[in-house]
Length: 122
Length: 122
DNA sequence: ACCCTGTCTTGATAACTGTCGAATCAGAGT
DNA sequence: ACTCTGATTCGACAGTTATCAAGACAGGGT
Image (tube, rainbow over all chains, first blue to last red; front, side, top):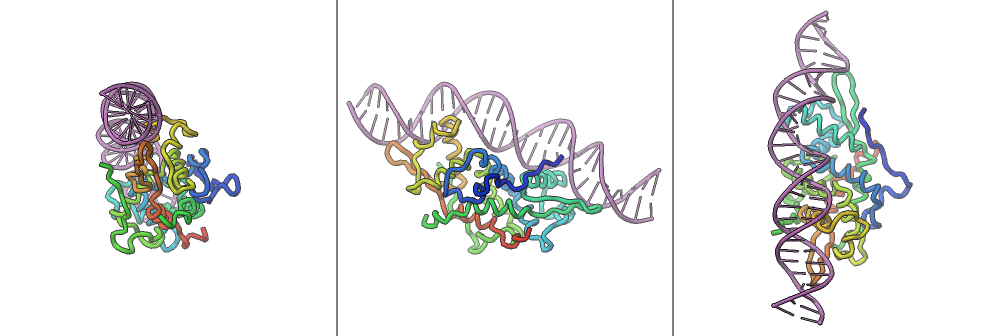
Protein backbone atom coordinates (compact mmCIF):
# COMPACT_ATOMS: atom_id res chain seq x y z
CA UNK A 1 0.00 0.00 0.00
CA UNK A 2 0.90 3.63 0.07
CA UNK A 3 2.65 4.10 -3.23
CA UNK A 4 4.93 7.01 -2.79
CA UNK A 5 6.90 9.13 -5.18
CA UNK A 6 10.45 9.43 -4.10
CA UNK A 7 12.82 11.64 -6.01
CA UNK A 8 12.23 11.58 -9.73
CA UNK A 9 15.54 12.67 -11.20
CA UNK A 10 15.90 9.91 -13.74
CA UNK A 11 18.25 11.48 -16.22
CA UNK A 12 20.70 13.12 -13.86
CA UNK A 13 20.16 16.64 -15.13
CA UNK A 14 16.54 16.50 -16.21
CA UNK A 15 15.49 17.44 -12.74
CA UNK A 16 15.95 20.90 -11.27
CA UNK A 17 16.22 22.75 -14.54
CA UNK A 18 14.04 25.87 -14.61
CA UNK A 19 11.11 25.76 -17.00
CA UNK A 20 12.63 28.69 -18.79
CA UNK A 21 15.45 26.59 -20.05
CA UNK A 22 13.70 24.08 -22.24
CA UNK A 23 10.37 22.59 -23.06
CA UNK A 24 9.32 20.15 -20.41
CA UNK A 25 9.42 16.47 -21.20
CA UNK A 26 5.87 15.10 -21.30
CA UNK A 27 6.69 12.20 -19.01
CA UNK A 28 8.28 14.42 -16.43
CA UNK A 29 5.42 16.85 -16.64
CA UNK A 30 3.08 14.17 -15.32
CA UNK A 31 5.09 13.64 -12.14
CA UNK A 32 5.67 17.32 -11.59
CA UNK A 33 2.02 18.08 -12.18
CA UNK A 34 1.03 15.56 -9.53
CA UNK A 35 3.11 17.45 -7.00
CA UNK A 36 1.78 20.84 -8.02
CA UNK A 37 -1.74 19.51 -7.97
CA UNK A 38 -1.23 18.38 -4.41
CA UNK A 39 -0.35 21.97 -3.56
CA UNK A 40 -3.41 23.25 -5.37
CA UNK A 41 -5.73 23.20 -2.39
CA UNK A 42 -5.78 25.84 0.34
CA UNK A 43 -6.08 23.31 3.13
CA UNK A 44 -3.21 21.21 1.85
CA UNK A 45 -1.09 24.29 1.43
CA UNK A 46 -1.74 25.25 5.04
CA UNK A 47 -1.09 21.71 6.19
CA UNK A 48 2.24 21.64 4.38
CA UNK A 49 3.09 25.01 5.86
CA UNK A 50 2.39 23.71 9.34
CA UNK A 51 4.50 20.65 8.69
CA UNK A 52 7.48 22.46 7.18
CA UNK A 53 7.44 25.16 9.81
CA UNK A 54 7.32 22.75 12.75
CA UNK A 55 10.20 23.37 15.16
CA UNK A 56 11.30 19.73 15.29
CA UNK A 57 11.11 19.26 11.55
CA UNK A 58 8.05 17.10 11.97
CA UNK A 59 4.60 17.40 13.45
CA UNK A 60 2.08 15.12 15.12
CA UNK A 61 -1.27 14.76 13.41
CA UNK A 62 -2.82 15.25 16.81
CA UNK A 63 -1.57 18.84 16.67
CA UNK A 64 -3.51 19.66 13.55
CA UNK A 65 -6.74 17.71 13.80
CA UNK A 66 -9.61 19.77 15.11
CA UNK A 67 -7.48 22.84 15.17
CA UNK A 68 -7.80 26.00 13.10
CA UNK A 69 -8.79 23.81 10.18
CA UNK A 70 -12.55 23.78 9.98
CA UNK A 71 -12.79 20.38 8.36
CA UNK A 72 -13.38 16.96 9.86
CA UNK A 73 -10.71 14.48 10.91
CA UNK A 74 -11.15 12.19 7.93
CA UNK A 75 -10.79 15.14 5.59
CA UNK A 76 -7.49 16.12 7.18
CA UNK A 77 -6.39 12.54 6.83
CA UNK A 78 -7.37 12.55 3.18
CA UNK A 79 -5.36 15.67 2.44
CA UNK A 80 -2.33 14.29 4.25
CA UNK A 81 -2.60 11.21 2.11
CA UNK A 82 -2.65 13.28 -1.08
CA UNK A 83 0.46 15.16 0.02
CA UNK A 84 2.12 11.88 0.96
CA UNK A 85 1.31 10.12 -2.31
CA UNK A 86 2.55 13.14 -4.24
CA UNK A 87 5.88 12.71 -2.47
CA UNK A 88 5.83 16.02 -0.65
CA UNK A 89 5.66 14.65 2.88
CA UNK A 90 6.22 11.33 4.56
CA UNK A 91 4.61 9.90 7.66
CA UNK A 92 5.61 7.53 10.41
CA UNK A 93 3.65 5.99 13.24
CA UNK A 94 5.25 6.08 16.67
CA UNK A 95 3.02 4.45 19.25
CA UNK A 96 -0.37 6.06 19.28
CA UNK A 97 0.58 9.05 17.21
CA UNK A 98 1.53 9.63 13.60
CA UNK A 99 4.19 12.14 12.67
CA UNK A 100 4.68 13.83 9.30
CA UNK A 101 7.71 15.57 7.92
CA UNK A 102 8.47 17.22 4.57
CA UNK A 103 10.41 15.57 1.74
CA UNK A 104 12.82 18.40 1.15
CA UNK A 105 14.32 17.11 -2.09
CA UNK A 106 11.04 17.18 -3.91
CA UNK A 107 10.01 20.54 -2.50
CA UNK A 108 13.28 21.99 -3.64
CA UNK A 109 12.83 20.47 -7.07
CA UNK A 110 9.58 22.36 -7.50
CA UNK A 111 11.16 25.57 -6.32
CA UNK A 112 14.04 25.14 -8.76
CA UNK A 113 11.65 24.56 -11.61
CA UNK A 114 9.90 27.85 -10.92
CA UNK A 115 12.99 29.82 -10.14
CA UNK A 116 13.36 31.69 -13.38
CA UNK A 117 16.27 34.09 -13.55
CA UNK A 118 15.59 34.76 -17.21
CA UNK A 119 12.27 36.27 -16.21
CA UNK A 120 13.75 38.85 -13.92
CA UNK A 121 12.87 41.73 -16.18
CA UNK A 122 9.17 41.08 -16.58
CA UNK B 1 -14.40 39.69 -18.54
CA UNK B 2 -11.16 37.95 -17.90
CA UNK B 3 -10.66 38.50 -14.20
CA UNK B 4 -6.99 38.20 -13.60
CA UNK B 5 -4.91 37.89 -10.51
CA UNK B 6 -2.13 40.40 -10.53
CA UNK B 7 0.40 40.39 -7.75
CA UNK B 8 -1.06 39.55 -4.38
CA UNK B 9 1.38 40.98 -1.90
CA UNK B 10 -1.16 42.82 0.22
CA UNK B 11 0.68 43.13 3.50
CA UNK B 12 4.07 44.14 2.24
CA UNK B 13 5.93 41.17 3.68
CA UNK B 14 3.28 38.50 3.61
CA UNK B 15 4.33 37.55 0.15
CA UNK B 16 7.51 35.72 -0.67
CA UNK B 17 8.08 34.25 2.75
CA UNK B 18 8.97 30.55 2.58
CA UNK B 19 6.39 28.22 4.01
CA UNK B 20 8.96 27.12 6.51
CA UNK B 21 8.85 30.43 8.23
CA UNK B 22 5.30 30.59 9.48
CA UNK B 23 1.88 29.08 9.14
CA UNK B 24 0.20 30.30 6.03
CA UNK B 25 -2.64 32.76 6.34
CA UNK B 26 -5.89 31.06 5.23
CA UNK B 27 -6.82 33.92 2.93
CA UNK B 28 -3.46 33.91 1.22
CA UNK B 29 -3.57 30.15 0.93
CA UNK B 30 -6.60 30.44 -1.35
CA UNK B 31 -4.82 32.67 -3.86
CA UNK B 32 -1.63 30.65 -3.76
CA UNK B 33 -3.54 27.40 -4.12
CA UNK B 34 -5.23 28.74 -7.23
CA UNK B 35 -1.83 29.29 -8.81
CA UNK B 36 -0.50 25.90 -7.79
CA UNK B 37 -3.67 24.25 -9.00
CA UNK B 38 -3.15 25.86 -12.39
CA UNK B 39 0.25 24.15 -12.48
CA UNK B 40 -1.29 20.86 -11.47
CA UNK B 41 -1.90 19.56 -14.96
CA UNK B 42 0.75 18.10 -17.27
CA UNK B 43 -0.47 19.95 -20.33
CA UNK B 44 -0.59 23.29 -18.53
CA UNK B 45 2.87 22.70 -17.16
CA UNK B 46 4.19 22.03 -20.65
CA UNK B 47 2.33 25.06 -21.99
CA UNK B 48 3.86 27.27 -19.35
CA UNK B 49 7.25 25.82 -20.10
CA UNK B 50 6.85 26.63 -23.76
CA UNK B 51 5.77 30.16 -22.92
CA UNK B 52 8.53 30.90 -20.43
CA UNK B 53 11.21 29.38 -22.61
CA UNK B 54 10.19 31.29 -25.74
CA UNK B 55 13.12 33.26 -27.16
CA UNK B 56 11.22 36.53 -27.41
CA UNK B 57 9.71 36.26 -23.96
CA UNK B 58 6.35 35.57 -25.49
CA UNK B 59 4.80 33.05 -27.82
CA UNK B 60 2.03 32.98 -30.38
CA UNK B 61 -0.83 30.59 -29.75
CA UNK B 62 -0.50 29.57 -33.38
CA UNK B 63 2.84 28.03 -32.47
CA UNK B 64 1.37 25.65 -29.93
CA UNK B 65 -2.01 24.67 -31.32
CA UNK B 66 -1.96 21.37 -33.15
CA UNK B 67 1.63 20.83 -32.20
CA UNK B 68 3.16 18.20 -29.96
CA UNK B 69 0.14 18.59 -27.69
CA UNK B 70 -2.28 15.86 -28.59
CA UNK B 71 -5.36 17.76 -27.55
CA UNK B 72 -7.78 19.84 -29.55
CA UNK B 73 -7.62 23.58 -30.07
CA UNK B 74 -10.42 24.42 -27.66
CA UNK B 75 -8.69 22.39 -24.97
CA UNK B 76 -5.47 24.32 -25.43
CA UNK B 77 -7.48 27.49 -25.21
CA UNK B 78 -9.12 26.29 -22.02
CA UNK B 79 -5.78 25.56 -20.37
CA UNK B 80 -4.38 28.91 -21.40
CA UNK B 81 -7.38 30.53 -19.81
CA UNK B 82 -6.81 28.69 -16.54
CA UNK B 83 -3.18 29.81 -16.49
CA UNK B 84 -4.25 33.36 -17.31
CA UNK B 85 -6.96 33.54 -14.64
CA UNK B 86 -4.52 32.16 -12.09
CA UNK B 87 -2.24 35.08 -12.87
CA UNK B 88 0.64 33.04 -14.24
CA UNK B 89 0.53 34.29 -17.79
CA UNK B 90 -1.06 37.17 -19.64
CA UNK B 91 -2.23 37.38 -23.20
CA UNK B 92 -2.55 40.08 -25.81
CA UNK B 93 -4.13 40.07 -29.22
CA UNK B 94 -2.14 41.62 -32.05
CA UNK B 95 -4.01 41.47 -35.27
CA UNK B 96 -4.97 37.95 -36.13
CA UNK B 97 -2.77 36.31 -33.52
CA UNK B 98 -2.75 36.12 -29.75
CA UNK B 99 0.50 36.20 -27.81
CA UNK B 100 1.10 34.98 -24.29
CA UNK B 101 3.89 35.82 -21.89
CA UNK B 102 4.60 34.82 -18.29
CA UNK B 103 3.85 36.97 -15.25
CA UNK B 104 7.27 36.72 -13.67
CA UNK B 105 6.36 38.27 -10.33
CA UNK B 106 3.82 35.60 -9.51
CA UNK B 107 6.01 32.77 -10.72
CA UNK B 108 8.80 34.02 -8.54
CA UNK B 109 6.45 34.26 -5.60
CA UNK B 110 5.65 30.58 -5.88
CA UNK B 111 9.32 29.69 -6.17
CA UNK B 112 10.11 31.76 -3.08
CA UNK B 113 7.38 30.07 -1.12
CA UNK B 114 8.85 26.66 -1.87
CA UNK B 115 12.45 27.66 -1.47
CA UNK B 116 13.09 26.28 1.94
CA UNK B 117 16.61 26.71 3.24
CA UNK B 118 15.61 25.31 6.60
CA UNK B 119 14.89 22.01 4.91
CA UNK B 120 18.35 21.59 3.48
CA UNK B 121 19.19 18.78 5.84
CA UNK B 122 16.30 16.47 5.04
C1' DA C 1 -10.20 -8.90 28.25
C1' DC C 2 -11.95 -4.41 27.89
C1' DC C 3 -12.36 0.37 26.80
C1' DC C 4 -10.38 4.82 25.24
C1' DT C 5 -8.09 7.86 22.25
C1' DG C 6 -5.94 8.79 17.88
C1' DT C 7 -5.75 7.90 12.97
C1' DC C 8 -7.19 5.91 8.83
C1' DT C 9 -10.45 3.62 5.41
C1' DT C 10 -14.98 3.01 3.30
C1' DG C 11 -19.15 4.49 1.09
C1' DA C 12 -21.89 8.04 -0.53
C1' DT C 13 -22.84 12.50 -2.54
C1' DA C 14 -22.30 17.08 -4.49
C1' DA C 15 -19.18 19.91 -6.97
C1' DC C 16 -15.57 20.50 -10.08
C1' DT C 17 -12.39 19.45 -14.19
C1' DG C 18 -10.64 17.92 -18.76
C1' DT C 19 -12.07 16.98 -23.13
C1' DC C 20 -14.36 17.38 -27.46
C1' DG C 21 -17.47 19.07 -31.42
C1' DA C 22 -20.11 22.83 -32.87
C1' DA C 23 -20.82 27.44 -32.92
C1' DT C 24 -19.02 32.08 -32.38
C1' DC C 25 -16.02 36.09 -32.46
C1' DA C 26 -11.87 39.00 -34.44
C1' DG C 27 -9.11 40.55 -38.09
C1' DA C 28 -7.10 40.50 -42.69
C1' DG C 29 -7.49 40.24 -47.45
C1' DT C 30 -9.56 40.03 -51.34
C1' DA D 1 -19.97 42.27 -48.34
C1' DC D 2 -17.90 37.91 -48.33
C1' DT D 3 -14.70 34.51 -47.05
C1' DC D 4 -10.74 32.58 -44.84
C1' DT D 5 -7.88 31.66 -40.86
C1' DG D 6 -6.85 31.94 -35.92
C1' DA D 7 -8.63 31.80 -31.32
C1' DT D 8 -12.26 31.58 -28.08
C1' DT D 9 -16.74 30.33 -26.02
C1' DC D 10 -20.72 27.16 -25.43
C1' DG D 11 -22.93 22.77 -24.31
C1' DA D 12 -22.39 18.25 -23.07
C1' DC D 13 -20.27 14.22 -21.09
C1' DA D 14 -17.06 11.18 -18.47
C1' DG D 15 -13.91 11.16 -14.87
C1' DT D 16 -12.08 13.06 -10.68
C1' DT D 17 -12.14 15.42 -6.14
C1' DA D 18 -13.55 17.31 -1.50
C1' DT D 19 -16.30 16.39 2.08
C1' DC D 20 -18.64 13.99 5.74
C1' DA D 21 -20.67 10.14 8.72
C1' DA D 22 -19.93 5.65 10.00
C1' DG D 23 -17.04 2.10 10.71
C1' DA D 24 -12.38 -0.15 11.21
C1' DC D 25 -7.67 -0.38 12.86
C1' DA D 26 -3.63 0.54 16.18
C1' DG D 27 -1.75 1.09 20.68
C1' DG D 28 -1.90 2.10 25.53
C1' DG D 29 -3.92 1.78 30.03
C1' DT D 30 -6.70 -0.10 33.37
